[in-house]
Length: 579
Image 1 (cartoon, helix red, strand yellow):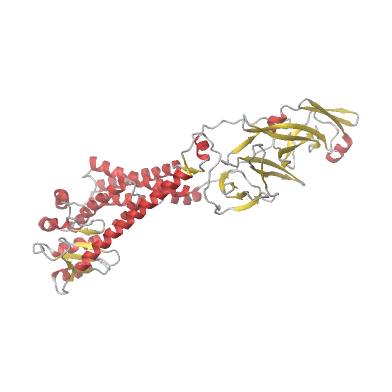
Image 2 (image 1 turned 180 degrees about the horizontal axis):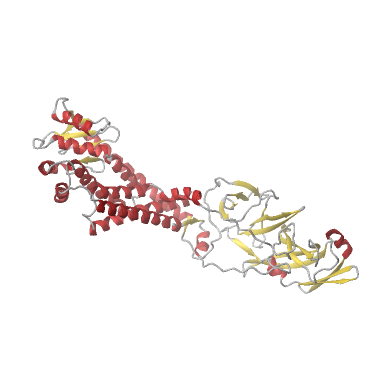
């Protein structure tokens, strides 16, 4: 959960900030090229990218456009079939070692759970403090308006203009009118119960029709809701200075685009009259909390620019329209890409003990920090209950005393349940978690693999591979009459035993001719006995013209822990006949 929250927060912040950076670049280079309506749309896009998890949506729909290819592998006709797939590549005569190219690994950024929890708590406190302060300011603003509020007569010019302009704009919302001595300029306030507050003084030289039209256009475009959503974005991303800089940009272009909408059908003379109305109410905007309302008046510093845009507003040319659409599409694509990059490169939260090893390249695993894994199934637990194994969609989760880590091990369906142990295999007095998983199933037999997990930091301890161990084993198979003579040498000790060819050939239709050495890998069984990890590997003879390998012996490996290499290596190797 913490990983998802951090990833979402980083991706949203990067996406919105990318749009804001483009906005500032446009102000420096192409400030007058794009129409005010589209500039306002770009600011609203930035607010949306701060709030809408675009990457999450892409991840949800991407499976609908994924094409699956099926690869068919044609086996070599000389390969020996078996009910269980060989566990050791290259074990049979006709096989060849697989070639691979190692990948270059770049360690992913990580945070310990302690540091991540501290950051998230600090972020949550910031969100709460910002939200409470804004709520307090808004409540104080509304209370001040209510205390100074007086009704507007129904037969007044303002009430008449309100009804007339509402009908002209086809606006269905119920809008109230009121006077207030707390404002010196007309303002629109309220998300669910919108009210236009008019000043009680300084309105003699104000064109009331233009004032009402301006505020109703704000209402029709839902500009108050835009500011409300921006407040939510600022609360979530309170730590990001760019989202706070966006507040002024949205307010500026909201007013400029509203002016353009008001005057688009006006003559030049009417536009001058509208400009005079703005001048008459300009002083009234001082100290207005613009994050909670929209007002006809504005900042004096922007007055010249506002009047210039208003007086020179023209019909949009097709060339400018196409350029604007292309620019905004490009910005949207770049911002989405930035969000995807940020999501993929957000720091992953790992256990405190694991954070150091993860930074050094332990990339096989990802940690979940939930105490109860979501959408997971308990596969098994140790006898003392300290080690639990859960199955997830991507692998398994190993839980040791409440600390959890996810591994990419696959669990087969329809086979024996995993074995889970909590035992001291290293001899240091501390128990390790041992997980044994079935990797193949044949007729009345399984083959499995063992995993040993350090109980302190949940890192996996390496076990020397069976392939490496058996590479030092010398074996010889010869025939004398009806007997098959088998010799093997392990750790300096020789083993000799024989088998009746007739018994083997009777089962597998062999003509009695066998390859001259033993082959291993069909069946590997790991288990824990007397606080030791052991493995039994089946030894087989291969008929030259037969169908299946014949099991003739077992190699028993007992492992020990090599502290210098931090690895489990063979301690004893013994070979026994199947008798």
